[in-house]
Amino acid sequence: MRRIMKQNILKAAILAAGFCCTVGCSDNDSDLTIYIPDAGTAVKANFYIEDEPYVQTFNVAVTPETYPQLTEYGLPNDAVVHLQADPGKVDEYNAKNGTEYELLPEAAYDLTEEVLVKAGTPKSEEAVITVHAKGNIEAFKEYLLPVSITSVEGAVADHCCQTIYFIFRGSMDASNMELLDRTGWEALSASSEEPKEGDWGHSGLKEACLDGDLNTFWGTDWSTQHPQPPHWIVIDLKKTTHIQGFACQAREEGYDGPKEVTVEVSDDNATWTVAAKFTDIPAQGEFRSFLPAAVDGRYLKVTITAVNGGPHVTVSELNLF
Image 1: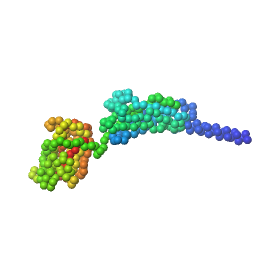
Image 2 (image 1 turned 90 degrees about the horizontal axis):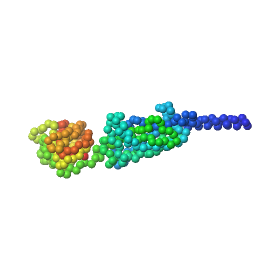
Image 3 (image 1 turned 45 degrees about the vertical axis):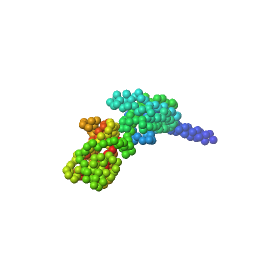
Image 4 (image 1 turned 180 degrees about the vertical axis):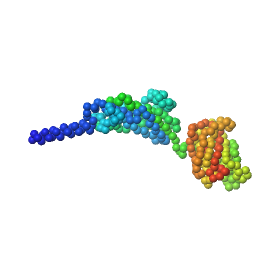
């Protein structure tokens, strides 16, 4: 009987020792600390600005004194980690890295302010940054959001690796952009026109690329002079206009449309600034693209330097967004 009891006591001791090993019970438990993986580095997040918010997640983790060797088993008890955005670190980051990031606006995000690290696990549940980009940030602009551990309950914060830096950049899908209202726009001049297209109901005049009718188009002269590229057209937008992107529609037959285009803007129809150059424009359908950077101007000049299919060009519609 005594022998059996001794065996049971021994088994219990072995099980207890095994449990302690599993959850990290050791003389070194007090050395386990909490840190943020990737702390100190920039985590870049690129996304489309849409009605639905963008969600970014990250974790905090457990590390022993021998950091960066990570613990496999975690803490012997639950721990609660408190997180906050840390705006004061934006200037510090910019000074150190030679950057000029602005802080992500407060209205543009929600942040999980505490996460749980369960006993026996090496990292926390996910912390969530929900970015409400639409209406709160500027497209194609990068914003910085530092997030820091502010306090820990049930464990100790590590001596380093307490702040992570997120760089958020929202972009737009050009195909979803609303085109600018062209009411009042006027085609002032063009390198040439082809009025004979009117015999087939296609117009051929420069105004046709602003009429909203895909059956008509502006076409360059093919009946008399046969000009070679470049072909150009100048449009008066009637007021200074903020321009983010350019769109052109090929004629429905799908040939002799623009292949390479230079877009310029002007305030006086005399001094021009190149806003964008586009190449490899498809022969069919509508082409849309953002400009490298948004511009403002009253006058628009579109110069076609190469054509799909031949020297003459036709353009059904020109638009901006």
